[in-house]
Length: 356
Image 1 (cartoon, one colour):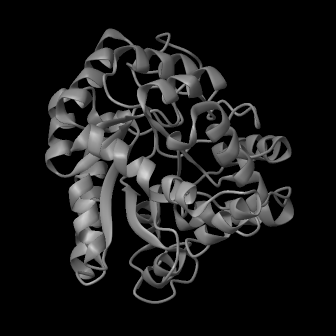
Image 2 (cartoon, one colour):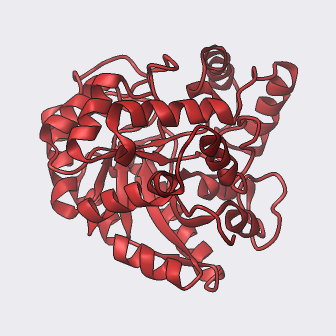
Image 3 (cartoon, one colour):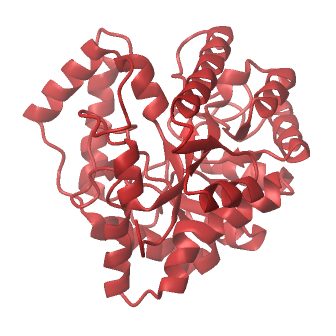
């Protein structure tokens, strides 16, 4: 997209959607998905972290198999579109691929349960190209507390500290989205790398435990890190948060595999009967500005979570819409130089400082 602010997005769940729904032709408009190649182009996306997510609640050894299959799915997706996508593991590779007109494709593993309490598995994921590990997802691991589970180890266990240190040694980002605030602080106490949140928003504006408190934002600033603000309405305003809490209770009671077509049918039926309260691009802009105000202009990025949520704000309905956020911020006085920091430069710097 000529003249667009370039985007590196921290989190997109298209691989899981494709796993559960079956193959889709993303070369054209992919109905029922937030993501396809034409809309990525329209949105100005130059680099994308594809989430190689697997759900909690399955045996950890099974989660390890599934995450390997998810990595394979992304590799096959890139192989199927060699003129549009290319795998990247470093900032230099992201820049080189972007210069060729292709979208740099990076891998992020969402949920530490997928390493099955094994540093050897973690190292293997790194060798396969994974460049961040989200320490938890919706439930605790044995070694790290999740934001949406009951505290168990007080942040990180001794093994959790080893995981963070090994991530540092490898040159792999310790993603602190989804973890409890105590885990955020514990990881930052140990880590020598910049703080990294692949898809989170500001807790001062929406009191969801997944969001980043101000005392953590100051540490993001001090480490030269980045918070990639997400578009999920549950994390944007209080009415949506309360609705999202009820949706989670409904989802937990659905008698079908998470993400399956039957699960999604029942989920959609409930959402149709109980619509999400309003949220807009302005809500996202408010969170972006809060992170900037507390942590600094060099500490904010974008992690939309497209294809990882059933509802999105008005004006940010798919990957074609990133420029709408930039236009909203322009009306608030943001310069193009600062928009480039938000969309591209801040995250690229953290990638370079951590992974090379």
